[in-house]
Length: 103
Length: 168
Image (cartoon, rainbow over all chains, first blue to last red; front, side, top):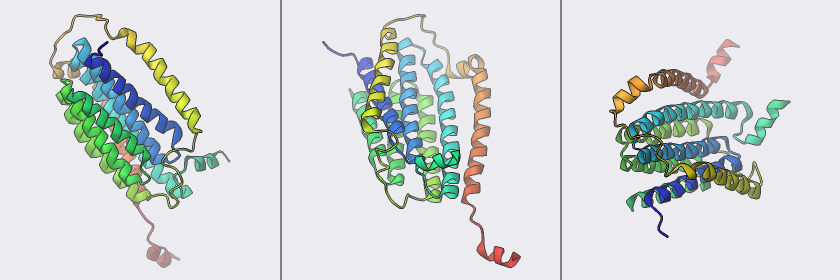
């Protein structure tokens, strides 16, 4: 049984997605959580382009990928701004410390 | 074959980005991931998106990360924030595995199916005519991003103690 290149790439994309998702679930540092989110989005972007390549509609995939990329960047910027403000107010980037906002 | 090597490299960079103790090093590994993903996108015949990913993902976002880490600073006690904390590791592994299995169940059956005849339209035509609403959405998102940068810059302003003394 031989795996085709798209199948191998898809397995790799799933792995990249898994790494990012595990990071999102496991890390406690707010900035590192944003890093993990970025990794997940990279995997999604890659999957989108791969799907477009397989279907013969790369330009449509590029167009959709561009929207994903812009949204991803904005999420990163807002997340980092939030992290800076949290650090200034609470003195830590630990996500557990954010629980104090409930009080 | 080269695609597989690049993808393996990007996964390695991603793992290192999450494993490294220092946030700055983590941001640099993320930039490496972005660069390799951009290269892979280029090899998948999507050069326009590859260029944007390289400049925005590996360039702009990394600069923003470095800037934010410079303002916020590293955590004084390195906790074991690298990995292990929010959820117990077995639970995190289990949820990740479950998510990947569900994704595979959803995606893999559709791989060989060709639902439409490939249509080769230029990128500009697809972007500006077919996906015009997306472009408007991107403009709105970029505006939100600018507000986010303003928030980031507002965080960097330190109060001047001398000025406070003069006032009092």
